[in-house]
Amino acid sequence: MPTNSFDADEPSGESQRGNDATEGTTGFSLSRRQTLRAGGLLGAGGLLGLAGVGTDTAAANSGSPDEIIHLDYDAHDDWDELYRVSTGDPENLSFVSSPTVSGNTALEMRIREGDHWGVSTHYDFEDGLLDLNGRVSFSLGADWTMDGRELANCRLWNCAIARGEASAGGGDPDGTNGWSNRMYVSTQGSDPEGPYHLLSNTYHMGEGDGEYGEQDYIVDGEEYALAQPEIVPGQWYEFEYYVRVNTVSGGEANSDGVVRYWLDGDPIYERENFRFTTDRTDNVVDTTGPVGHYGGQYVAPTTLYAYYDDHSMALGGTFDSAAGSESESDTETCP
Image 1 (spheres, one colour):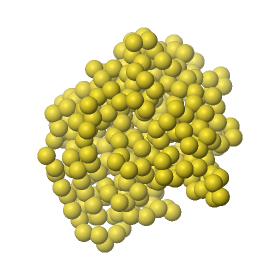
Image 2 (cartoon, one colour):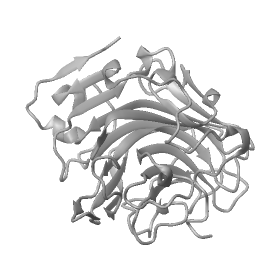
Image 3 (cartoon, helix red, strand yellow):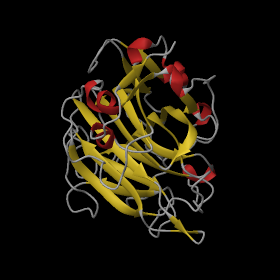
């Protein structure tokens, strides 16, 4: 089956609410000041305290971040104090007390049997970013299955999106109208009952970009795969991602945009030839966050659950660059 044969944002009846990442459906008004914020040494390591973070991270060719943000789920009554919804049913996302990685609260994402959408959410940035380094712990529900198809894919995370009509739904990026990178779980090279593999889907300007973005399966033999991690339902994993916008020369996009992934600290995917944008002011990283979207021309075989915890972001740089800096450690909890 061709790897680019699924519509990552196919409308699915009443659950479709506008183009993903372009239209908000919740009253999201949170600024970055209303989160637990950290800088310097504490923000990069002491605050996060995540197991399995290795040394092969996103520091290469990157500087100290402008800001490090850790979304403290325990400090909020509802997830919509943190994330905006663009597509899907907000009732499919909720805070739960179990399972968690740290603290007392995690996010639970539901995708109902026979449906495409859980919900697509976004942590929006006040100003667009040229690079973003993020970490999140995720787990598939213990009963997760992808039965019924030879190849099935389910989107789990919006890594980086420049809002615009070309960021999803079969759009055609032209350098000014949006782009995106998203992480999926997939049955490519695996069994419908798992363990599963991962997939990086990117809407970009490059040659080879498919009708619904370009799919890079993170399995042995694929050009940009550095490993073939296996995702077992019921187990927690730390997913780290880094996205850097390409440079522009004479109004033309250079083929040097970067996407890197790690799983439990180990590098699993690296690609450094993306052409995302010709506008490094307005067509850059606007948003990131959890998402659940199953298939394209097919739907979830049963009601599925995924879980998220410990979402942290280094804005305009990388976690490791902050760890190596001499900037003063600082944390702030805002009401």
